[in-house]
Length: 191
Image (cartoon, rainbow, N blue to C red; front, side, top):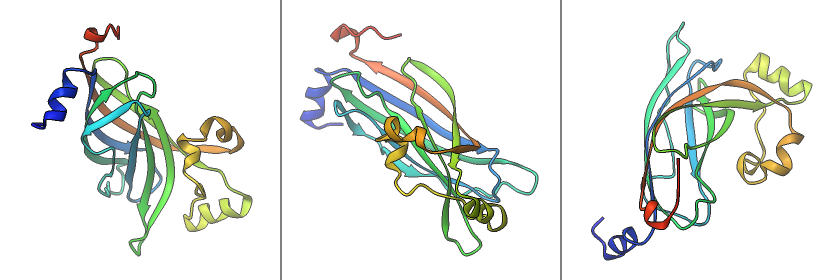
C-alpha cells in the first residue's frame, strides 16, 4: 500500500474492510465438497486489495460426519463512492466424482454484513429441481441438474429466479468482520 494513488485515495474516500473466513458447509449429501465463490459489488466500489473470487479445498469429512471443513480466508479492502451495491457473496458448491471430475450440486447467495463488527452468517445452498428424468439421474447416478447460466443467481435474479423450482441441499457457514473507515468524515451514518 505504498503507492501515491493509494495514499491519496485513502484520505478522500470512505473505506470498507471485509475480513473473515468461509468456515464450513453442512447437510450436503456428498462424500466430499468444495465451494467456489465470487464477491460481487456495485460499480461505485473499487476493490484495492484481496481476491474477490476463489475456491476452497475439497474436504472429505468421513463416514458419519456431515461437516465439510474449509476455513478459507476472505480479506477485502474497498474504496466506496456510494453505499449502493453493498457486496454479496455467490457460491457454487460441488464435489469430485470417482474420476476426479468436478460436478456442481448447489448454489447460494447472501449479502455480506453492513454493520461494523464480527458476524456469523449462514448461507442457504439450493439446487435446481429438474425434470422427472433429471431427478432419476440425480437419485440413481448422483448427477444433479445444473443451471445453464449462472447469471440467474445474481444478475438476472429478480426477473428469472421465480421461474425455477429449487430444493435446499445444505448450508455454508461464514465468520465475517466488517470495518469502516472515513464514513463519518463524509457524513455517512452507519449502524
